[in-house]
Image (cartoon, rainbow, N blue to C red; front, side):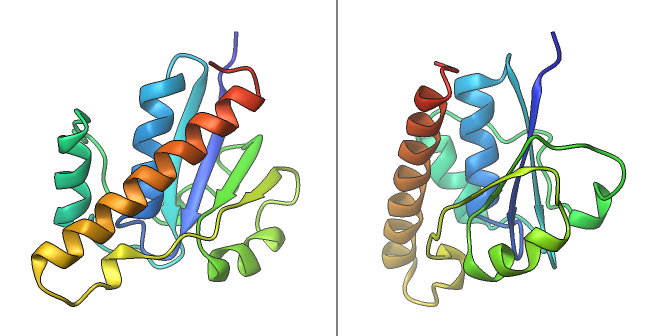
Length: 142
């Protein structure tokens, strides 16, 4: 049986989309093949790795990727956008995929003390975790 291929798209592929990819792997990895990418990818934020490790997720093998790595190479059944800019630019890129938009604040833009930023990363992690679990339940993947 072929796995459902999904793409989680944001700007930098440093936090939100990486977190979503990790939770899709954790909760539906045998039925879904999740990918994440950014429109202008950067490195995975260290706090992304830290807050996922707190929840028992090891990001070994995950790295920041460009959406261009997938264009014309992978057919996605679903494309999730996790920020408004990616959502605005995405419909012209993946016309055949079902589009789902989650507007989630980017914790990677936090410039406060680490204690404040880690709280933002945890809030975003928990929000994305719930979004993933709810979507999987509605699609009967759980």
